[in-house]
Amino acid sequence: MEASWTLPKQGAIIAQAPCRADLAGGTIDLWPLYMFHPGALTLNFAVNILTTCRITPLKGKRIQLRSVDTRREETFSSFEELRRGRRFRLPLAARLLQFFAPKEGLLIETDSESPAGAGISGSSALMIATTAALARFTDHHLTLEQMRVIAQNIEAQIINVPTGCQDYYPALYGGVSAIHLNADGIHRESVPVSPEEIESRFVLVYTGAPRQSGINNWEVFQAHINGDKRVFRNFERIAEIARFMYQSLLRADWNEVARLLREEWKLRRTNAPGITTPLIDKLISVAARNGGRAAKVCGAGGGGCVIFLVEKGAASRVATVIGDNGGRVLPLQVARDGLRFAS
Image (cartoon, rainbow, N blue to C red):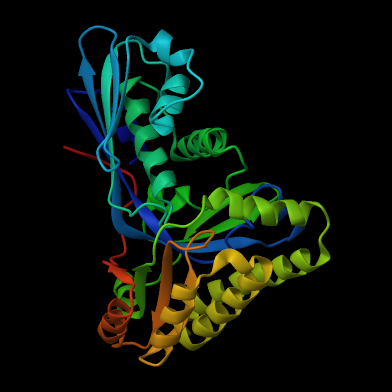
């Protein structure tokens, strides 16, 4: 797959990348937090909720940006005009264009199947899709890890706070991932869990748009760096839970996965009380009475998506009761593949 990034472009370039649901170890993937918790890792899986970037060459120098899902557009007479810009209506595409510096005119169209503010890394997945499309358009021959670095760094420029690394790996690789955060770098491992097993045991629910997720993480990040002992202890336990959950997934010990998911959610609520909402608490409660075993918010919380672990065979029943109580159930299919080019 690496070699495909060097193929010549012919007409429009279309790149797609999936979103993700995170299971354990979130926030600790912000550098350098994981350096203070040896053996830290995060666990997540890619979901078949796709983001897309389509690039079409244009005659002349004009650069046109269009977001299909947000219905916003922005046009520049040339790259030079865009390069001098500081504020953009579509900052994701604009900032990546500033980096890749195309020598010809183009139309970039982006689209996301993720609801706004869902916490399933729609923006990070779209960063990957757009980075890949622009790399091909400008003949940059990048490895997947180089794409991750570029996407993560430029997203930090856009949201003005540090960004974690975990969100980019499901978009790049698909499947179930353990992302090991070590002193010698970040290492992604494919976790051998059957996608069908994941699909039969989890329900993904959208509860509404949260605050800007980067701000939630930034507040916890600052507390950790400033020496808040309670936050440090909580992250020590969060790192430990992620390690135990990784081992539990390898053993297919779903009783232990459920217990650890409940414990992680309890700790995260202690770290940041604003991570939950009355609706989230209500949905977790009604799910528990209908086969739900554990739940946690995706991403930084305050709204967005919640992932529910349910008894095997209870997914449909849990989905129905959640829908009846104000949640929007999203289709949950594990994305078998990550970043790909479409025709």
